[in-house]
Image (cartoon, rainbow, N blue to C red; front, top):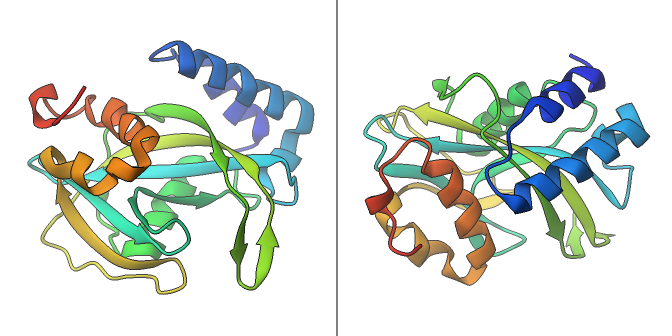
Length: 196
């Protein structure tokens, strides 16, 4: 896979709403102007990332980690760091962050796209300035009976959270709740959510 493949898949994507239509334009702009460089975090103002949302076989639970930097329950994912097969990247990040390796992609391609603002923070003793994550999200089904574990340098807890209780876990990160919700509604019934 190369950046042209990613660019073409982004161009083909049908946005879910106006916000995604805007995000799509920004991701296309990034890929057209920065090409392979867009996949490196050395592009300090922003770079490509991939995330994975994992639900169990009953579609009632979502696998989440408690993120060390943001002190919140979150999806799984990370920086491309040169990897242009973003589904492979999302899958690898889920494995590294939770140990879960038995994943089934819910649909042929990514399920959403977002441009996310990341506040400046300290990572591994170094200040990382405010920047953007140009993110593609993949939706997976995973085996809830499999053992999961933490990745101490990134998260302090990993667990399956009932989707109907998701808002209670991420209410302080309300914008993220709506990103999770729009993805999860592709696979679970809408009445599992506590708010609109």
